[in-house]
Length: 385
Image 1 (cartoon, rainbow, N blue to C red):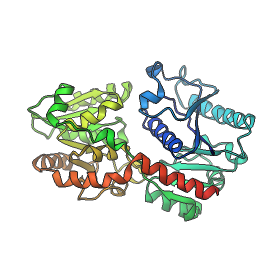
Image 2: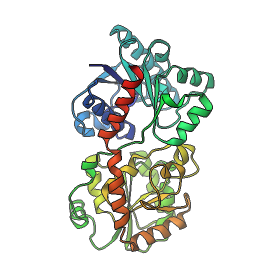
Image 3: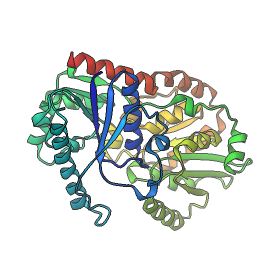
Image 4: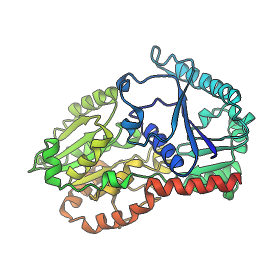
């Protein structure tokens, strides 16, 4: 059985999307026949200290998590210096650990962040990089050197394939197009809108517009917040997710602009999100066009979750979103235009949305974690054979 090492400098468990993503990817690789280990820094998340990472992220315990020592100052001195100290020391430690276990030439190394590959490409032979966002290093020569040492690239949208080929000369046969995925069975649950609302204590006589995810500005949440002011009083807009700091800032913004129909729920267990989606009348993906990653690079996990829920979707009209869906599947609006978003919400609530939901349920079958793992595993085996 081939050893596969997934490397990530994030904390586990964590509220971060990439943490959940890495865990699901490791589960899929293990199901595909690899002997999988997830190597992470020896750092703890005080919010989830008592949570089992496998249970928290809803994955099987079919791979090992190895805690690698690092110089972790982030818990005491948050900031860029502490972050880079942690990342660089983690990079050094993981290379030493790989040498100690004699894995540099025999194992497959896999990661989703270029910042986890400072030193490993100099010594290891088989490295695969999954490109979500271009977390490039300041020195372009270093980026090009690391890219030249990568055995294969897993790329989550077509735009990034073009950039890698044009700007870095990566051959097309060293790349595979593989968007993100969703656990369809967890989101396509048998519960009515009314039952879901009763379960969550939500009003039965209101129109509910829902956003789930972080409250980062590039997610376009401020556009949705501004749109709230243009909606009738019986239209409630719920925001589910966000860190404590972002929630506090978001509440201040909500109060300052008088978005009285907005309700900030805060962070909820990921296992509860499918019920929230089923409780909604409309789901919103309001990504901004002002951010490069948002406009071109992202492959939103949220979009796949929305699609699997069977609810009508309103989305920013961006290349990154159109990489996955078209007008038969979502109602598009002009990104960053809160008036257009409010109008789209009104339009969506007047539509039945059944044809869009059926189209999404048909298309989402291609984006299961199982199919994703099978596709990437076949690519890995083809490259290393």
